[in-house]
Image 1 (cartoon, helix red, strand yellow):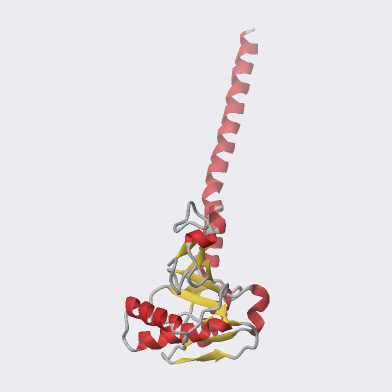
Image 2: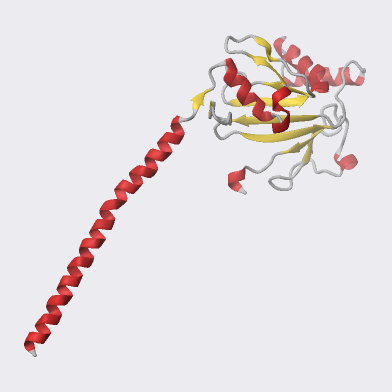
Length: 226
């Protein structure tokens, strides 16, 4: 009987040792798994490059345009040497304004070509040293006098973010996102039924109501926060 009890105890010890060895093996494999994940993450990070060529400026700026229109958009903006030029010719309804490489962060825009006189006037006034309020007031006066026009319903797409690196394979800028503007000169909250501030994230609202620059703002929630 005693021998039988000893055999049972001995068998239990063996099982316990084997289980301990297996647990140890699993734990020892964990760092290797973490290393693989880390290496994959680092590889992904290494795909990102700085926007430091005219070609990169064009590619990233086009991300502000509707995908089906990008092939034929005209692209304008500052090149890498600081000159404001036509970076690429185009023949559809959109003009794309590339990011200014000398400014912090990233900001590119795509707008209907009928907005170009209004946009160009703003760039001219800024180049003359006018501040935001002066530019606003001058263009408002010119709109009222019929010297300048913003087509009702003309759109502006803005692609922006704090970082200036991008994926050359997709042309996406790191952490950049889109927001949209629909111009409706002189519109108000009363005439549109829209609030003057968003009720919640992703809600449209009207900005600069009652002025020449009245517009509907639409700021989509980033995909990773939906």
